[in-house]
Image (cartoon, protein in one colour):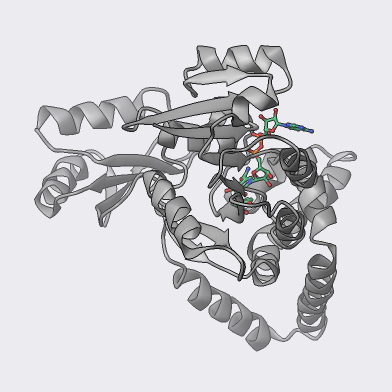
Length: 362
Ligand SMILES: NC(=O)c1ccc[n+]([C@@H]2O[C@H](COP(=O)([O-])OP(=O)(O)OC[C@H]3O[C@@H](n4cnc5c(N)ncnc54)[C@H](O)[C@@H]3O)[C@@H](O)[C@H]2O)c1
Ligand SMILES: O=C(O)C(=O)C[C@]1(C(=O)O)C=C[C@@H](O)C=C1
């Protein structure tokens, strides 16, 4: 029997628990200091068992996942140093920064217990076990940061376990991780929050700012709704990287100020062309997708029941729909649905059928 202990059964810890629970010979135990949370984990059946006792959580555990905010992980590693752990036990974490955690983890190195930092590159702006899903990590990268002292066998055991998440494992140096993830995750969160707060300030004198905010504003600011405590910890921890990135961001913005001031239309156009090129080269990573799909896009009025109507229409014609996603949804104006089919012939049939009533694009 493989025992997996999870501290912090929230969005990430809960999603991991759901990936592991029910697998052959696996028991998942969740820990919280709060008895009400322990009850909740059990009631939602996210774990096999939950407890407020740290000793009970780690007793005989083969893997320990620390899934709490970044600022608490070092503390947990410290406490774990003094608890009886099973020889060969692998301790890992999911914190969004890696360098300082790897440093704390290196102090855990006791005989036969190994720390390997981790960070799944998937998440949501929502937190808590209520938002957890076993599909969260599918096709996402999952970074592991073993060091030169990590036995290959321990790394392989953790990587093998993580196959249940259907994520793609990537070995990375913790500092390199923080530099890259600072740029592609932490900096965008700062920008989104700063932008929302700037507009919120204008909105105080005229609520039309809020009312007119459309797709563009919504698309770039979704992550501004992320958990404040989690992000406080991440930004404080990745200080030196972020200060450099923010200086560089100021240079980017200064470039736009110059171009707009001097009416440099060609420069502006080139900036958009360059961004467009890089952005369209980003690999698409949709959750729950493990092979390629045939997609069509349908313009539909945004009213209740429309998704059901389309799904029923396709179902009645025995067309297999694999995935349905709202790309943009606004009141009273057309929204866009992405319909995905695993077979091309089904996509073709759907196209013919839906064209009669809707604007459909391939
Ligand atoms: N949300 C994301 O998109 C995302 C993605 C990858 C990694 N992470 C990392 O995963 C970790 C957890 O994030 P999450 O999104 O699951 O958050 P969450 O709020 O959903 O879950 C955090 C869990 O930790 C517990 N917790 C909170 N404060 C604690 C404390 N002081 N002591 C002990 N337990 C505490 C909470 O009760 C909860 O169970 C963080 O380190 C975060 O950086 C988050
Ligand atoms: O999709 C989101 O909402 C996320 O913010 C996920 C996201 C990111 O892509 O920045 C956020 C933090 C994590 O450490 C990893 C992933």
